[in-house]
Image (cartoon, rainbow, N blue to C red):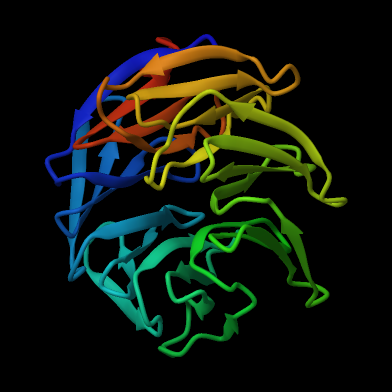
Length: 301
């Protein structure tokens, strides 16, 4: 995986709980333990806006399809929809009984979907004034750790060792057993497989339709931390954070370690997010975020 560290952001917001690119990869969001959410141009190491309104740590965030809104969630049990330019909260959604760990917009950004330690996934109409969820998914028997949404599927990962795919068109849910508590789950770029980061120091690759396990990627350690795993934009490399301060990269087909990107030795790389259009990523460890890619990216952004 031929990329290098392009920029290091000192976020000054306590520990960064999550880092996320926006829809086109031009900006990124950082979620802080200091209750604040920040919007950056990572290519210029430029802080654009700070969003304050959560009553506790911010745990996840997602930008809308036109980058005009942000949805965030946190340990204050709330989901907030923000206006990007003014920095003001447009909606505060309260329905979860515990920390809200993950949140995403659907593709049209008309629905926000959140997952929580209360074992529930809630769907919120982002365009109405209603503060009640339009749907609550209660199939999980333990905390929801991750959510991803495609045009008609909601993919959730849970500490109950299962990934679930909800088909919005048919109303059906397909459950696959991962064998260990699931810390993160995401589709590959071609939509054919699911990358599942598990609590036993192993990343697993499953066929989306059959549920068959296609590969295992190991060697890294995550301890008792919530560490994210994923796949790069080329669909060629599995990536994961780790407790040794490195981002581990495996060849998807051979399952061999091909690179270890040094974020900060001795810290936990807890959050990673691949660039939506290019081979590259952002990673978070402690108070810092690093932008990884190729030097020419700095000239084009």
